[in-house]
Image (cartoon, rainbow, N blue to C red):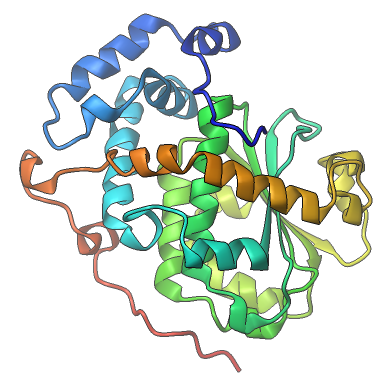
Length: 303
C-alpha cells in the first residue's frame, strides 16, 4: 500500500480478474440505479458496482438490495460515516490501535487485516471512533485493490483488558456487525481473535445476539501462545513483533497515517456517496426501521 495519492483499481483489470463478471452485468445495475432517485448514482463508480456484484455472487437482485442497504447505512450510521475526515479523533485512534492491512494473503487466498491495541489504557479507547477510522482505512484499501476472493479480520487481544470490554456500546456493536454481515462489499470469510484473554466469553456474550449463524461458524478463538492461527495464515504475513516478516508496528502506523493524509481528498469525496431519503420511492428509511426498535445507547454494565 503506497502512501501517495491512490488510483482506483482499473475496471478492465477487474474483468480480467473475474472473467465471470461481464461489463453487461454492470451495465444492467447502472440502468437499475437510474430508476432509484434516492441513491447517489452519479457518484458511484463502475468499481463500486463490480464490488457489490462480486460479493453478491453475481446475483442482480441481491446486488440491488445490497447496494441500496450499503449506501442507506452509510447515510444512517452517522457515527461511522458522517462528514468523514481526518481529525483529532482519528489521530487518537491511530495512536491507540494498529490497523494493518496485510499484503500477504491467507492460505486460502483471502485478504486479511490485522488489528491490535498499541496503547493498553482503556481510557484512550473509543469504540465508535475506532470503527469510523477502520472504515476509512478499509475504503482506501479496497479502492486501490478492488475485489478480493474473501476478507478476514484478525483481532489481537494481546493488550486488551476488561476495561476495554466495558467501553463497548451495544448500539455500536449492533450497527457494526449489521453493516459487516448484511452489506459490506466483501465476502467475509472469518474473524480470528488472537491471544484470547480470560474474559473472552464475556466479549462473545455481547457479540452473539447480533451474529448470524454463518458468521458465528467462522469465528476462531486462538489461545495465548497457540499456533492455531498458522493453519489459516502463514506466520511470515504478520508484523515483525508477532514473529512475521512484515514491517514493524511503528512503520506500519507511520505509513498508514501518511497514506490517509495523502488521500484526505478521496476520503472527503466519499461523503457524496449518501442516500437522499426525501427522494426514496415510498417511505424514507430510519435507523428504527432497520432495527425494529431503537436500541439502548447506554454503556454496558458487566460485573
